[in-house]
Amino acid sequence: MRKAKDFGEAARLLKALGHPLRLKIVCGLLSEPANLSRIAREMSLPISTLAQHLAVLRSGGILEEEKRGLEVTFRVADTRIPGILRVLCRTIQVDEDLPDWTWREMRS
Image (cartoon, rainbow, N blue to C red):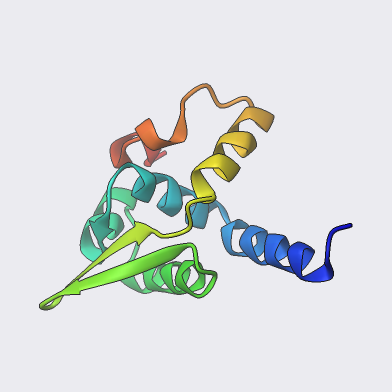
């Protein structure tokens, strides 16, 4: 029997991923880590908007950041995320495998 905390954990992950921009951010970061300015540039987003979404993903345990001097690089921290997104893509009939997506392919 599943415990309530298992369902709570699943709901927390889904809530953090539950926005189109956050899904795009995570898909891009599966391919390669990136800093704030690169993500903003590649996704054509204002940094303030991007920072809000990154905060949700960090607090959800999906992303982690690495600081080197003034630069902060973001990467996917939760090893379950690629599998979750592959299942999601199969349900919406996306043909590509998520880790192979590039930032440029996600601009639309």
